[in-house]
Length: 237
Image (tube, rainbow, N blue to C red):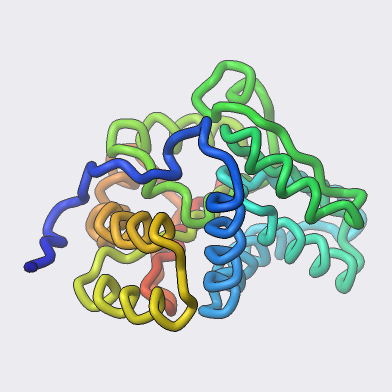
C-alpha cells in the first residue's frame, strides 16, 4: 500500500480520546516513553531547554510545563538534570486525559518539584497561566494546522523564555522503519496504529517554517534530529 507524505494526515488517533483508560493505554504510554528515550528523543527536548536557560542565573527558579506530558518521563529527565546541575526547576505536566495524569503522578512520587494538572490547553484556565518555558514532545502533531497556529500564538504570550517543540518528521522511511520497531518492541495494536498515523500527521521543515512565518516569529531555529524528528525552538527574548 503506497504511503502519501505530501500533506499532513487528519486521521484521528485512538489516544486522542480523552476518556480512554486502562492497561492498554498504560502500556502504550510507557512503551512510547521508552522508545522515545532509547532513540534519543528526550535529549532533543533537553538540548532545547538548555538553549533557552543558558543565559539564566543558576539561582533563578525556572518554570517549565510539558504539554501532553504522557507518563511524565520527560519531566523526570528534566528533574534529574536539574539536580545534577544545581538548577531550581518547577516542573508541571499537563494532559487532558485524567487516567494519563494519574499514571504520571504514580511514576513521579519521588520528585517534589513535579506537579500534574488535567486540563485542556485550549481552555481559558490554561491560557491564563504564565511559564518560563513550554514544551511539546511528540504532542503538536495531534492538532490540525489551525489549532497549531492558535496554540503556538497562545504559547508565545504565556512564556518568558520560549518554546521547545520536538516532533515527528513526516517521512516514508520513518513510516516503514516504525513497522520494524513495532515488531522488535512488541507494541500493542493501539500503539502500532497510532504510531503510524502519528508519522503521517507529523511535519516537514516547510510546515514549521510556514507556521513561523504566519505567526511572525523572529527568533527561532528548526533542526532535523535523529530519529526522524524536528527540534523547533522559539525564543521569547
